[in-house]
Image 1 (cartoon, rainbow over the protein chains, first blue to last red):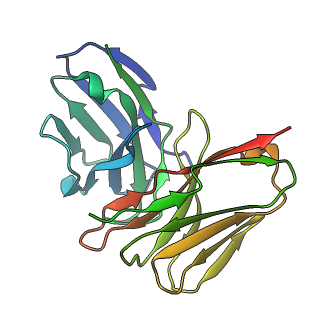
Image 2 (image 1 turned 120 degrees about the horizontal axis):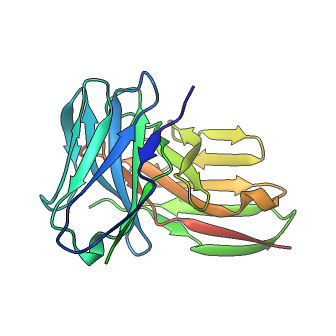
Amino acid sequence: KAGVTQTPRYLIKTRGQQVTLSCSPISGHRSVSWYQQTPGQGLQFLFEYFSETQRNKGNFPGRFSGRQFSNSRSEMNVSTLELGDSALYLCASSLKSGGTEQFFGPGTRLTVL
Amino acid sequence: GQQLNQSPQSMFIQEGEDVSMNCTSSSIFNTWLWYKQDPGEGPVLLIALYKAGELTSNGRLTAQFGITRKDSFLNISASIPSDVGIYFCAGPGNRDDKIIFGKGTRLHILP
């Protein structure tokens, strides 16, 4: 069974630009959660999507958004990038909404210059 | 909001030693999760605990769900080089299902 895949693995952008990251969950998993990981703040929850609906949201500004498609693939978008958005963005999939046994992808390393 | 405090922040041990790390919270958690993250990878779930007092093993790893439901520990026996990485405790918040992560314990193994 293929694991969670994320594309791209690395990305360099400049301030003010926008970026879209993609996540394909494990086959059969319908829940996708997104996290931001930084050295200072650790792993912080961004949002969770289940059956194309945002089920839960963390404390991030509206510049961070996401969506989920009918095949459970998910994208997250960050608009008007700031230097502080540089981080590892991880997605995790699970069978059910709010599932505690989450399987993480390798992450997308975003650097904002 | 709810927080998970992990200690120690980092550990330097000799190969073959046993390791113990823990995670505490000021509020109750109903599930405790332990993850390991290798450099350049996403976290991998090691052990999930669902009942207060539960003791669960996964190979050389043993984790316990504290009786008060406010703490958990993870032990690694006879450490090997591939145990190097960051260990996170995590659990779903009480008000919603958002998974909250501790800041991690970074394990270093000296040759």
